[in-house]
Amino acid sequence: MPYFGGLTMNGTNLFGTTRLGGATSNGVLYRMNMDGSGFTNLHSFTAATGFTNTDGVYPFGSLFSSGSTLYGTASGGGATTNGTVFVMNTDGSGFKVLHNFSNLPFLTNADGAVPVSVILSSNTLYGVAHTGGNGGSGAVFSLFVPPPLSLNLSDGNAVLAWPTNADGFILQSNTDLTQPALWGAVSPAPVNINGQNTVTNPMSGGQMFYRLGR
Image (cartoon, rainbow, N blue to C red; front, side, top):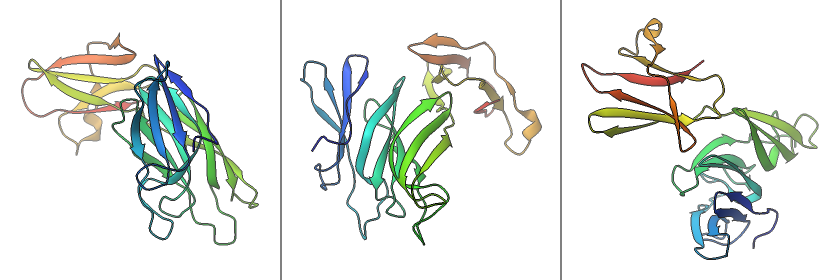
């Protein structure tokens, strides 16, 4: 049942949600080509026990696309039955819950409940919750999203990449996690490859840890 949410375009693909159906009747996230071919189920929301589960149920609203990443909301389920905010790669990998909305002991809470879609600006997601909040009538919320940092090994090099829209973040490295003062900027400067800031570093010497800092 593809209602409560429209389609989102990313490259030559369309992405959408169904509130019901899928492997557990709790909804799916899907991808298809713009001509309607190549329909692929990217994620089926898991079964709920007592209306709670690990990823949410009943996805609500359109997905938000940024680079190779999709953001969305599930209107129920999660840790408290009140819904989740999630992220997933456009190839269907990397599904992760970013936020579980809190309990509603007296129909009120601090963050709202039953989220109804999100948008991303810089590294912050903004959205609306249909109910909950301080007055029990809903809430507008924001959620900081750290940019993802990937590391792959290639020909003796460490290839690190992160989204180009991660404003203000720089790649840093450290040889010892117990020494915070040792974090320093990594050179060379990143280059834009397929919408990702990319740095290629030769692997030499001892261990090295990387992070995005600002």
